Amino acid sequence: MKIRIDRGVCAGHALCAAKAPEVYRLDDEGYCCSDGEVVPVRLHAQARLGAQHCPEAAIFLDDEGEAAQPPEA
Ligand code: F3S
Image (cartoon, rainbow, N blue to C red; front, side, top):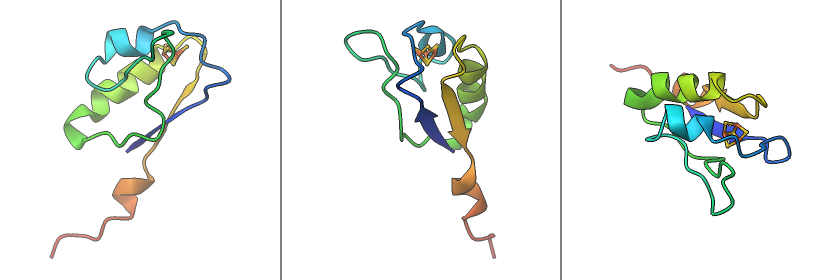
């Protein structure tokens, strides 16, 4: 899972980091700066929770990473 932040939409509400502090980071001005970061499997639920609480819907979670992984033998 990879995080995509629409920086043009993020308004610095910081609920993402409040709900999922292990996943989302804020820059010095309080805007989310986790764009492009890969979320480890153990934090996927937290990542979704934080995204759901963003009032601006600025967070998108890209699941392509897992789909591209080869199945275990
Ligand atoms: Fe921005 Fe939404 Fe987080 S507005 S700081 S991405 S809660």
